[in-house]
Image (cartoon, rainbow, N blue to C red; front, side, top):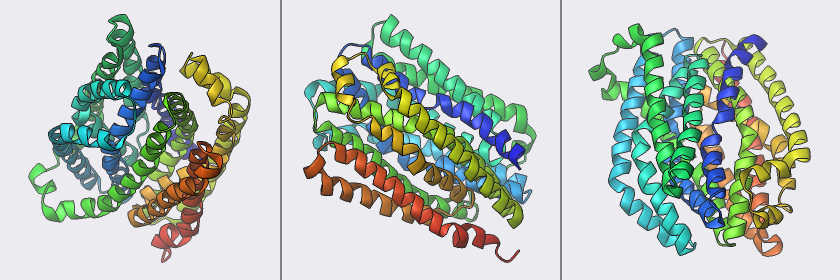
Length: 434
């Protein structure tokens, strides 16, 4: 079982190490442009994309869970049909995002309180990167499908390709061609379409015969799409709650000024950096939970979850040690602005507590996704999002900007407790009759 876990988690971790580089490279290059406004603009623009794309997170998580269960049942034709449904939904969704882009941005800046300079740079970034929507959403679907098919190597190849090219293109456009924030957006756009090209090639190499057996017209019939949208409807609500928490973190930080917005932007990137290691095991949990539920194998399901928990705790402890001794060094990698670095010191202790508090929540997310327990995931995120805002407004008058970090920690604790209590009835309960 450990071998199966590591064969899935290992490539996912290697890929995930590069995933935060999309945002971190954008922020780091903006940090080298010389002013806090550039960092703040990337933070705001990235938040706007989160508001859009996180609503479509179901394209990855829903596709992965449904596919994994089909794989466990050995229904490979059904699994292939899920990929076609997911990519078709992704392309239709991208057209919708293109249609509403102007209205969305202008409405967003009616409620986002920031400086004119940050607003100007953020709009420049957004109106270029939005044209990558078909590529970005299709990659959600394809990578989720690969995970469901117990193939962690292919999404690793895609992610590494996207993120290495993102670095190179952003440096080329923003620094070498001196395009500034616009160059960062153009680099990200180019890298996303390159990723789709690589993903399509991998599908043709490994799954050409399987995909040829899929009837597109039959796949998009209502009877075939019903289960896909029933599961994903709950996941959309979950995604909305996620973006409320993470965009809320950024928008609330913006009212404290450019310096603290820059601090909060970099701190969030660093707090999520550790999670990409844990998510490797969460992806393994997603694939294995779906597989063993589909195969009706309760013993293997329980064994895999127990071992996944041990691996996740090891990552959390190592991460806590790393943040304890190298937190400020990591922060300095993101910016050379001494004012921002100085302002960050009182917030660095949050990096130390986050891994142990959040690791179980991230792992259980993957397990519940594999079990297609979308209703439980929805309910958990609704309660945790409420706890985030309640905690912030309760304590912001007492501890100020620090209340943001307390609220983020509270929402993670709520997620952990709720899913831990639901694990036995909602996940193991699916196979209780075995």
